[in-house]
Image (tube, rainbow, N blue to C red; front, top):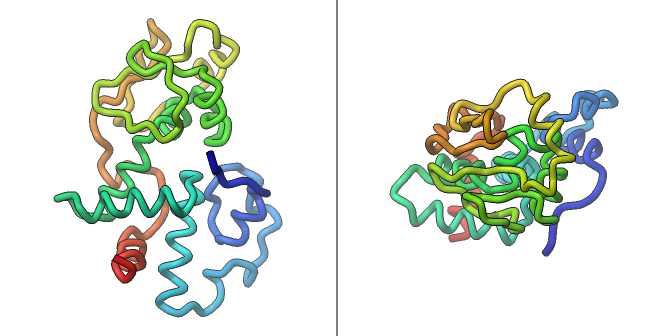
Length: 195
């Protein structure tokens, strides 16, 4: 399974946006270093937004193309559908719920079998979580319980079940609730030329 690797801070500075959410990621950032600080063509702006979205969710180009195809076939606005599909991936919801401190840690937890969905062990990070699905740490994986206990809060579409120390996807996220700073329209324009 392919996954994006490499220095996170360097990627944040190159994209001109803290896509990994680390407080120190942009410390060495200087004006003029990122691509968005330079004059970009329309294509360059679209490409930059696409790269930012891929970096936010840690997906490769092949996976991204798969999500985009589904977005164009859906009855929803393609940009909203795309962000919603990426946001409801299992690895991302494990991160948003507070089981992991970073998206990379969340992905590793899923791959190593620490997470269960509706009582069933799953090791597929891209698994699409549906409304009503309960995500929990497996009983053998209580070493990660401190992350959950110290998490301040979650996004409004995830409900915490404190007694079971698990979370449930209450509803599909609205675009404005997703904490991702990108322009969906530019990404849709980028891919619409290729399809």
